[in-house]
Image (cartoon, rainbow, N blue to C red):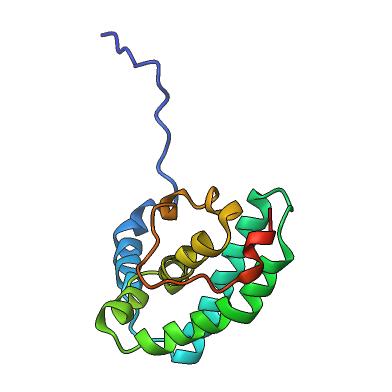
Length: 152
C-alpha cells in the first residue's frame, strides 16, 4: 500500500492552540470597558490625540509648518478640545464610543472630527493633508486665525 502526501508540510499545532477559546472570551470581554474613564483622563487622552494629529501634519508637510498654526494649536485648539470633552462627556454617544475598545482610538476620531474643520478653514496649506475634511466647512465656523492668510 502506497501513501502519498501533499507537497505542503503539516505543522504541529503551537502549544497555545488549545487556549484559543479562552483567549477569545477574554478579548471579547476587554472590548467593552467595565470601568469608565474620568473627564480628566478623557481630556488627557484628547490632548495626546491632538498632539498626534499635529505630529502627523508636521511630518506630512515635510517640516514646513507655519508658526501661526503651532500658535493656534497651543492657544485655541487645545482649549477647544478640552471644552468639547467636558461638554460631550455625559453624552451617551460620546461615552459609549469611549467604552468600546481602546478609548485612545475613539478619542483620536473625535479630536479629528472637532479640530480638522477648523484647520481646513483657517490654514489652507494644510487642507491638502486632510482630504476627508477638504469640503467640510461647517456653517458658522468663522476664521479665527488672522495670520493664516500670511502663511503662504
